[in-house]
Amino acid sequence: MSIDAFDTVILGAGAAGMMCAIHAARGGRVLVIDHAKAPGEKIRISGGGRCNFTNTGTTARNFLSNNPHFAKSALGRYTPQDFVALVEKHGIAYHEKTLGQLFCDHSAKDIIAMLTGEMARAGCALRLSTTLESLERVDDGFAVVLGGEGAGSLRCRHFVVASGGKSIPKMGASGLGYQIAGQFGLAVTETRPALVPLTFGEDVLAGFRELAGVAAEARVSCGKASFDEALLFTHRGLSGPAILQISSYWREKEPVTIALLPGRDLFAALRASRQENGRRSLPNALGEILPKRLAAFLAESHGWAGPIGDAGDKKLAAIAATIQGFDVQPIGSEGYRTAEVTLGGVDTAGLNSKTMAARAVEGLYFIGEVVDVTGWLGGYNFQWAWSSGWAAGTAIAERSA
Image (cartoon, rainbow, N blue to C red; front, side, top):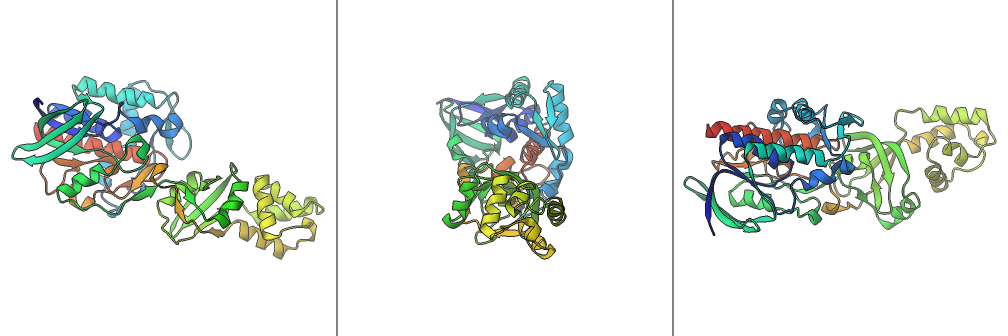
């Protein structure tokens, strides 16, 4: 095998890795390696194929981490507006869907083409279908052995781990980045699936199956965390943005509280329905406020029957209170198979928040999802990829100058 030399080798041709490469290339030769056959595979499937590439309201408050302040430096120096400027420079049409979430008008492939184009212009090398066989620290940097189509031995001054987490293993996700951290003495916090549907025992699931496909606006809470977004009933349990959000905060044996139609005075709506037509049945009255299948399910489950005109204020208030504050008990989640991200990762205590460099290992960097910085649903994790990749790439270029 031939021995080559690069200033920087980046493990992972995803969002963070490609962004890092573009900026690190100002400081010398850059090689990006990935086991996949194409770069940016998680970008390609994100946002229903439209890529929710950032969120205009991004702050460190939108992330979970053992150190809630760690992300501030990178996010503050490379902002959503900076990435939007790059998108606009390339003429990529986009739109805001809701809550600051920006999506491509056409395809997520536009973002991949933008990044690979920038890498090519910067002179970055890319080896796909290539695996990392070994990584060792040597006096002047790292000795790297690669397998697969890009097999070979090489040396580099900087090594960047942008390998992501364990989410979506069918796309090749693994814990390799955590193994590398452990090899060099960096701690890794507990990892678990995040932004993932929740599952339930058969006693609860039987009812949810009847409602599969029904969506409703809800406030979903667990502990101090609460999200007002859509909830979706599925054959396997509960999903939808509100559930995916709360899954990052939920822990085993904890209940999840659901309030349907948050912000609406449901008691007043039921009283108005009673006044309008007292002969209307309670299930039918609820069906004019909630999705009909959901209203019928709730009415049957709680024994809400008879004409609404027979229900006094006390009963209507109790019905409203139940609908806007009931607990469900998940037994788990769908796991890494469908999780959008991995919660936890390389402990930020061992990293420099400005450069993303390992404090105890000169030339070693960790960026993106592999780090213990996990965003909410809605473009935040992509912004962390851009920001942390930029921070590491810029630091590498400055170090090499």
